[in-house]
Every structure is written in structure tokens, then in C-alpha cells.
Length: 103
Image (cartoon, rainbow, N blue to C red):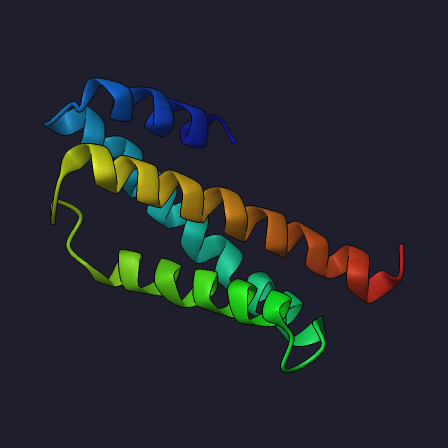
């Protein structure tokens, strides 16, 4: 996702203001759009494994991120956290149909 690359690039410059808010808002929309399939993917992983724990905790953390106010905390940290969460959830969401269909 291009927004992930933008967020990680902006985080280096530690921007504030509308550009940071706009990117984070778009990333939050990406996270929300990926949550259902990411949850479904987590359920396909064998219970009580480290992998399932990591995937489930990543999803939980992403939910916490989007529940917090957009402007809460350090701008560079918010960009990194939202960017990484969107990236991971997107990967999980994309993996769900592949796992489900056995491809």
C-alpha cells in the first residue's frame, strides 16, 4: 500500500498538521477494511500456537489504534504504528481467502 510507504517516510521527518492527520485517517480506513478478514485468518491458525498469538495480538493492537483519537500521541510514532498495523492486517486479510480456498 502506498499509504504505508508515505506514512513511514513522513515519520522520519516527524511532521505535524494536516498531512499527518490525512495519512493516518486513510490508514485507519485501511485497517478497518482489513479487520474482518484478518480475524477470519487468525481463526485458521492452530490454537495455542505462538503464530496465532502474534496475529491475534497484532489485530487487537490495530483495534486499539483505531479506537484512539487520530491526534493522540507523538506524530512520528502514530505514523509508524498505523503504517505497520495497516501493512500487517492487509497481509492477514489477503492470506485469508488463499488459506480458505487452499491456493
